[in-house]
Amino acid sequence: MEKTKGRLILVLGGSRSGKSQFAEQLAQRLGERLAYLATAPILDEEMSRRVAKHRQRRPERWQTIEEPLQVVEVLESLSKEVDVILLDCLTLWLSNLLLHDNLPEGKNSQSAKEDFILSRVERLGRVMVGSGAHLVVVSNEVGLGLVPDNPLGRLFRDIAGQANQIIARQADEVYWVAAGLPLEIKSRAYQF
Image (tube, rainbow, N blue to C red):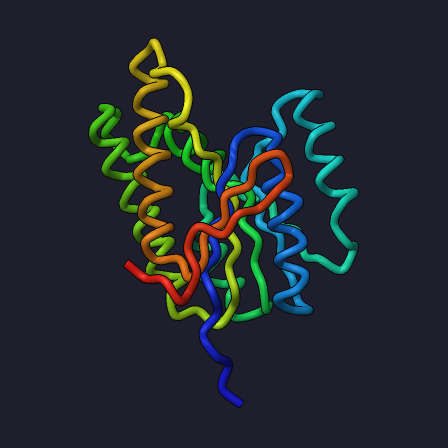
């Protein structure tokens, strides 16, 4: 029996908005075989506690993969093995790529970094459109505050905004979460 195309769902929100919990609930309703693709590197005790809280919330049957950089490659292989993949989170992946000294190889200018990262996001979208697995992507909306006071902060804000737009364009559904309340802002019925 041929597997049908999975849905691409983007869950946006601010920090501590409840977006990850909503995405986890959504993922559980979409299938039985679930994978959680975590992009957060554990670099200190505080981040270790945050990751532990996320792990405790998830059922043990979920497969967990921690990968800060090779997200597209992991998604390609996982999409054949599971019903649902929860990617948490897109913006951490973007910052991991942005701050990695050797990406892209041989080029370290801001414009080279931006082009490289956005090409990876475009590839992510292409990989998941047509995939047999559902993909739920969690991402921060970082453009609602003040303009960052430094070039790196502005570059990150710009990349994150463009990445969210790339995924939102390809997504079947987009949700905005604020104060733990999800609002559907794009449905499969509404395509632009």
